[in-house]
Image 1 (cartoon, one colour):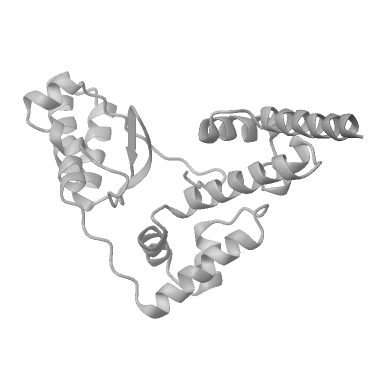
Image 2 (tube, rainbow, N blue to C red):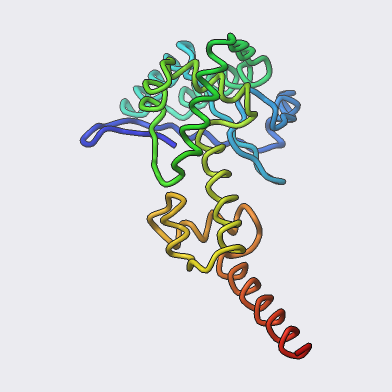
Length: 225
């Protein structure tokens, strides 16, 4: 997730290479990473997504690559700059800087940040707002939260929202739209997609299953009478 101010302009670079190419260069092993990796953001059976703060070395290489594209330089020069970026990025993934251990004071503030998120699941916080509320820098909040709870802030919040939604679907009479709003999703279709991705079923399926179970119980009671 990226927050970009309205009217801002930014450049992005997407470099794609094949696994066979990585293997030939001896880089394939660098991606044998786990969910406990400091740069881990999300993953599934066939995909691993990591994010890291942009080191000066990579920032300079990226600028050179963008300048090259604007100057219409030849493909060989572009490829060389891409390889420099890949090499630097793999070095960061292979030997990540360890997350700093939170102090007891920071730990209390990080726990307070978690409680703030859980107290009102419908509210959408930015990292900057949450950090100010807890008296931490954004960097210390993000690093400390990952260290304490094993997940980035937004992933932790998403999982908490979906888990509460699943409980409400099974235990209350509220419909899917009401529940999605209650846990902070203004779009019911988006809520259904992330719910399906997390639990493997649509919210409506859980609601239908609960409704059918209730009907079965009522029928059994009536039959017993």
